[in-house]
Image (cartoon, rainbow, N blue to C red):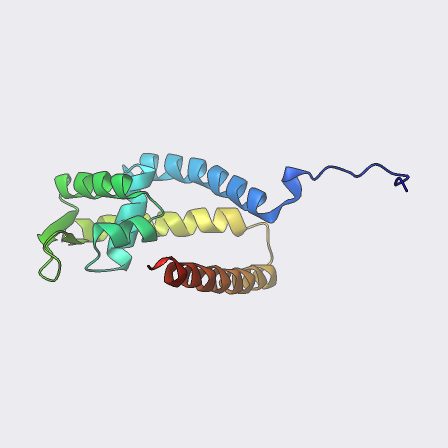
Length: 161
């Protein structure tokens, strides 16, 4: 028996992941402009500096994950921050193949200013929500993040030969 109504094709715009990625891209554009004009750093450098300041003694591989950059971007951003005197790079005594990144004294006030800019950007993005809605959204994101982390950890254990 044929359906009386043809099946409606799915619309990409209705998927949460599509909307989340679109929001992320639009936020990146606004953030890049803000960080460049008011902080003097590119988006990659800003993400790297924020992560280095928030996770002391971080490796480039960890930086790539925390800053949402690929390893090459993380390495270039970290080196740029080292060249600007904002970050110190030292040899990793535990793993001689990697380096440890930490804020330089000159980088600490820049990191604080950057974090204030990130707070400003966060407020601009979530300002359309009431405080209660913001709290609910953060709670829902925490649950989704925990689920995604658990799924990732499960995949990582299944990928091991």
